[in-house]
Image 1 (cartoon, rainbow, N blue to C red):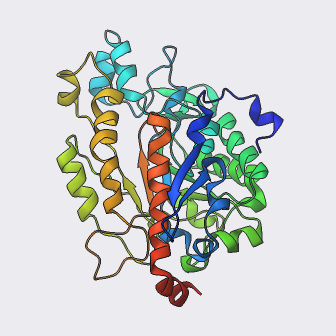
Image 2: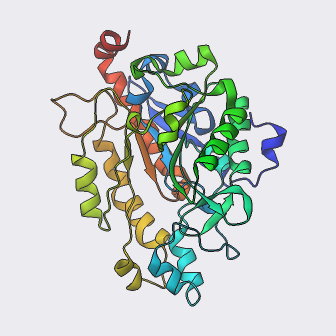
Length: 349
């Protein structure tokens, strides 16, 4: 259940999307509550390492906070800075990748957040960014904090991907803030990720994995290092190129992995489509042509015999589209693991 503090947040206005349908190992249809999907997984899957489960995530997760009042951020491309005074509306349409806030994303099953942060001159705060400043970081992170407190079976991954305008002191300040916010809920770094399962984390009451992609992480045992969850960027602006990348990318068997199911528009791509938007020209084609192909992928342990690399985290833009079909499709992939019952028992105990 969502507590009173979380109810105060602006809510996604399609509650029916939070119920998904998956096929159980005996072929029967089974409803799943996206708000609590980890809790509702079959018990066998809760003993599988988290790095071998299929987990839905969002790309540039906090860009819903970009508005017409937002200013250019330090990560803005030079061409963006030149065009901004004349084409602010166009730039807005091509920098926003999510339409709903952190809580709403959690309620429709998102368990991985892709975070890019920047400082702002003269302001003693940190902000999310994607070419333009989004919101200050405390409200979304507090939404995550409240959510995990009220959903003790769910695990959330916060991937601090990029830092713009950060000094050493800024990193230390941010690290202290995150440590103080989540405290004992953090899943500490460990040499063998095969022991990190939903059941083991529940026993330890640990629910938040923080990946921190900066050398500052070396002094903080509570945060995971970048190599524990590689996230290669496809850099593709065509569906064909993206699908080839997703099918052929390789991963280490003992680490997690992020498949980025997103198109990346180049300046040339945008110029010829400037009256459109990232949602229309990138997110919707991925929804129409990539999402149906997700059924070809499987979670699990990578082996030399695998054709395509098994998935772990998969991220997308505008994850709320079509009644959260993205989350439902990714979560459903976990049911494939039930068809390998003997392998599951032998490998994971």
